[in-house]
Amino acid sequence: MRPSGSITALATPFDASGELDLDGWQRLLALQLEAGTQGIVVAGSTGEAAALLDPEYDLLLRTAVEAVGGRIPVIAGTGSSNTLKTIELTRRAARLGADAALVVTPPYVRPTQAGLVAHYRAVASDAALPVVLYNVPGRTGCDMLPETVAALSGHPRIVAIKEARPEPERMSALLALRADDFAVLSGDDPTACRAMLQGADGVISVASNVVPGAFRRLCDLARSRDAQAEAWDARLRELYDFLGVEPNPIPVKALLARMGIGEGLRLPLLPLSATHEADAIRLAGVVQQIETACREHLAA
Image (cartoon, rainbow, N blue to C red; front, side, top):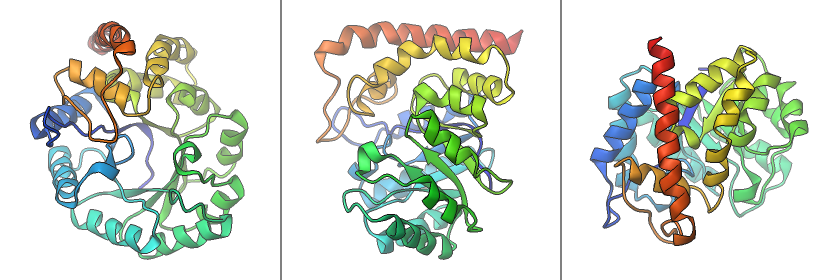
């Protein structure tokens, strides 16, 4: 398995009482498949994995695997602050039918670089699932350096990295590690186009929850070095900015709610502040226009 293209880090829809909105989940999955999304992540940080109970995690993943039916990869978030727990959750995801595991650097505990190598080798060597490394220091307090990725990239069960740092220098260092069996994915929507124009294999995106067609087109253009890529990316800039006004996934869930998918979040996250409500209403219209343009392009 070598993940590539437009991969959506799915939000988890909850109803107004905070329970799973399974109908909304099914509609979100259908939206992604219809738009040409090339992979999905279930129960990542955008999916509020830390707020899910074990039976809910199992239900979401099993339902996603059934809905996808092998058409695209299903990647399960399995990272934790403890190596043994990460191994156990990865085994569980494998039993539920996931194709790969997205394993974030252990949050809060701040391991050394040597500790990261030992952690990931232990998870990958258990061989439950292929592993996608995930570096997002703004959330975890831990930055996995390129030389650490280099030490891990040759492991036969480590197949990719999702890099959420936006600096072009970081992406350039990681792109030097690309191989037939190791992919480099952006984890930062605002710089994903630039990363793919540099040679990245794709993006694991938050924005593609609401503009899956636009992100599939962006990935196709950027990965083929089409001159239209940057212009198309510019159309999405306002959306990127909005998705950063409050912690993820608060803004994207506000937009999904206006699409009839889910209504709420779970504490300690609160709904979008009233300060940004007018922007959410306006962006919901922009999102609809962008997706309509994508459908018209495909139909032409």
